[in-house]
Length: 135
Image (cartoon, rainbow, N blue to C red; front, side):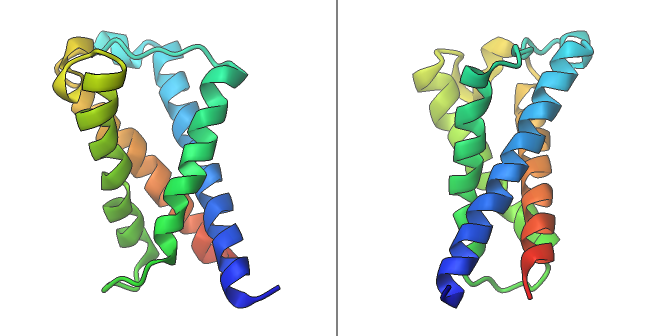
């Protein structure tokens, strides 16, 4: 397998695993009542229909690890790259797809912080896994 094909597959796999970790965190915080106690109405049900697109999109966002960056730190890259899905969620998905207002404020005032936190988990997990698979 060529180097670029291998790296591409690994970036997608790492991003998908990060998507799984992100999704389990979102679900767990909802299940445990963390979000509701802080006034945020995000408590999804863990179903294949909810989980599958998040894993796939996590893999697609994982392709960001293929781009050259200034920093060699995978963890810094993961945090910076996590801003991409956060911005899409806050400024496109919530207002236009979900009808929850700009930045999802209809779900609660702290919604943007939860989105940034959850996507930071994605970025850190994906970065860690991508780094561990590099030879």
